[in-house]
Length: 238
Image (cartoon, rainbow, N blue to C red; front, top):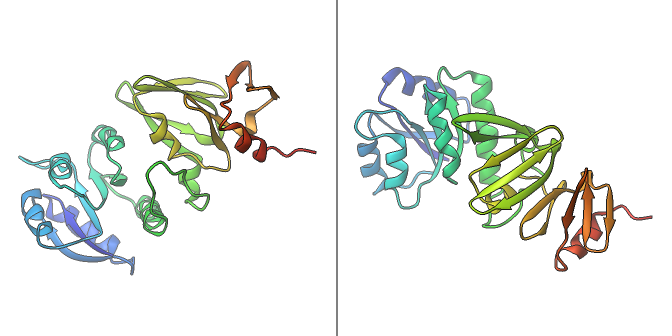
């Protein structure tokens, strides 16, 4: 995969280039100290991956993303983890790396990148079971400008509430500004099922099923007629 590096710090570009060189599937074709020059390059050339610094003078990394019509896969780079909160708003962003970048953290980003390349995501599709282990086990949500880690297996119910969703786990509940469709894409399909237009459940947490509803903990969740056949298929019936 051809890639470019955009960072206003020469040393930072050198560090990223060195880490990329250890991955034969990636080839650095250009490096840029500002996003404007990179946009000019992309207007004439195609690349599969961009390693992009967020905090650059005059024209930030997010300005760069918003300017490009069809941005390639992007790995964000930042010295301030608070900037990474906005990353959740962009489907093109594969991962974000906080400086100083360790080799171990870079390897995780490459796993996510390779998975996105090998299993391109269709709109509205559930995530494939073969995704990397760290991606199946956790994700982060933005709560009052804090990134909160949620362990996916602990999720019991996800409910749509207008422009927000409510995520209920074994121990906590979180209200997040996103859509049910977007959160569905981050969930492993072997554990989760959308049983109603407003609900996604962890099928392993089901206690009881009666008529058109399921019991999870103390919550009774409606099951739509259209989704009930798929739910029944998931059950290990005697």
